[in-house]
Image (cartoon, rainbow, N blue to C red):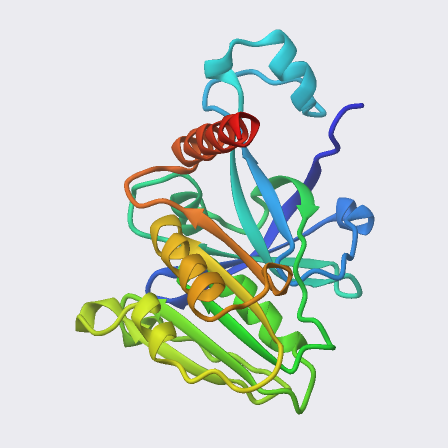
Length: 270
């Protein structure tokens, strides 16, 4: 079965902070976009290669069957910051660091009427209502999902968010009915990073539901700390790397596939 592409048009853009661009898109296809319960709802944005003549409507399965790999569209994974079916609007936040990368420069140049194609959504996390307290940890890449989760936290339940960004100019106004305690960490200040900040956090009593995403190396250290040192049960933890320092998304996918293969070989050898 062919994968269904959602084709939208950019409605407006906004510079949320010096390095974060918000793109709001809409269109008739949004009526078929599933309104899932997940706050880490993600989509794969599809970027056609310049100069390649693709069939319309774009059929990715046909493209991969009929065209050489170097002509396949590129895909980049992004979290849906907000979805408003009544207004017909889908919002995605893009980290932008100049001309490097693919999606960030696209967002910086996007204008109303530009086409935005995507696959999805996926997702697996939403704040559990039976948790005694909530913990949200991440960097700029995880900030859209953290922002969405904060808005869905149950009122009256303690919640802590630790968010690492470049400097104070990258802070965002985040709201939460739970009155979450939000701690911003700034790399430019040379202070403690996410791992040290989590180590220093006094955990409340009770069962935590944790969302931890960001750079793969930091996430690895946080996983060990939460599972082995804090004793957080694995089923109460949503944790994975969103990106790896020094690798683009294509390279990161290769790394993750190699790691999965190694884990499967090791498990089979036991």
